[in-house]
Image 1 (cartoon, rainbow, N blue to C red):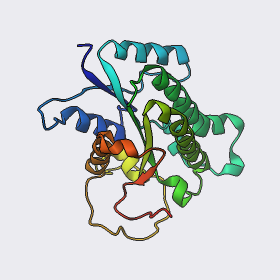
Image 2: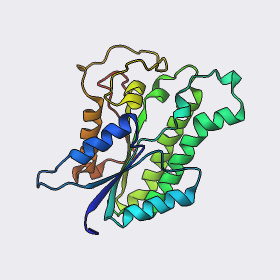
Image 3: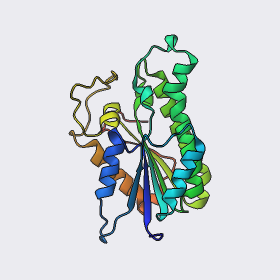
Length: 234
């Protein structure tokens, strides 16, 4: 068992994280093998770093952690509120929690991931478009993305790559599930996508697989936008 490769998906209990977890768990490589895929969701308490450390230590007993996918944003961040009405507690819940979760995850990944490992963050594109009444979310997403770039710079010495994939907010919240009766935050539309509609989950899983290959080892600190050409970053 200790020789098996392990993929850890943070935020695997909802939305795009759950869909990615299922997609990676069901994937089989060309040689007929597959990673052990472990999902961490609401049971992981980012307010308790020792508990997060214990979770990673337990996962490390199952094999070699060679890939981590971080899809976690605290759900408080998706509740619209005017910034002029926010107090410190509301700002902390809607923004700082997600930043701390990324920080603690990076700390444990550094301790547990193998040299040559792959770290992929999946985040919504809100920072690129700016979303009224979701300032904490936009701030958290941009903070996590910049944190990932700084980490990528340092961890390159161990041949660990750290890249970010961004998707539309609705895809991040829902994965491939239908909207149904759920009310989603309003996001400014920058225009129709350049490519035909498709599965956001399949697009992201494909990019994660690409970044996990030997050829993907040449790319780190990058931002890839998987929204079929709606937001085209400069």
